[in-house]
Length: 217
Length: 100
Image (cartoon, rainbow over all chains, first blue to last red):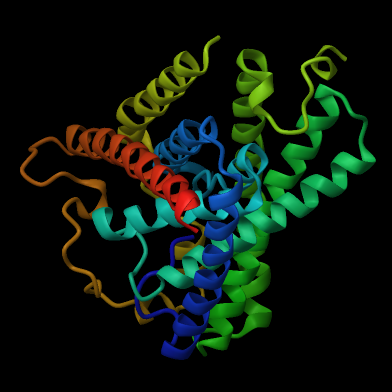
């Protein structure tokens, strides 16, 4: 879903950049206080996993592919604002080093896949955690559904920016974008679920909100 | 499992995915590109990127003959660079703690 140069208009690109920069600034000031010594390697390895897994495009329909986004995984493991920082880092490296996503659209890409992707998914996750049972199954269920919503919400934001830019009307782009990302979201949910299961099996204490005792249930 | 061992194992999984998975990734257009092509606004995307200094554009390391090896190498370097950059970034954030 990396927007290329030219698809978002100047004003939309600037507004999106300002919006994502403001959230990143907030995330930075929070991280200064809350990012523990132990979380530094966890943040680094989460970013590297998100980068690697984003390279693995899988086919979703005839002539269409999708790839893991990782915002929900990062938000669940590190908290929503640290999740935004991880996504902003990965997207910036992809843009500058690999030409993936236009530099003029970087603000919009961070806004969609970082801010909306991580914070939206995290909101869904917390809501479901409240509803579902406080067990390993309830945790993974909440994480899976939240991961599915992550690319769907991001693609809706992307459609909104495209329409504000006058690129294409919202009523046509919204269903097309959310429709294909609803399919991609199944892959997102699977990868997040498998990854979190592996972390729970090896180091459950690294998963916030999962007490080691609850994993037996 | 010790934290250090966990981090090394997770980084190893990331590198293996990037190196051995990326050459087999689907090259079909992604969701956005597909919608853009279907709805006819893909042509509005600039043909030349505004940032033209990407050393490994399109996840291909220049000068490597085989496309698969080139992509795998880009995956290896990108995964390690992301790990290093994120570590340095998090350290930098932590260091600001004492100053503010």
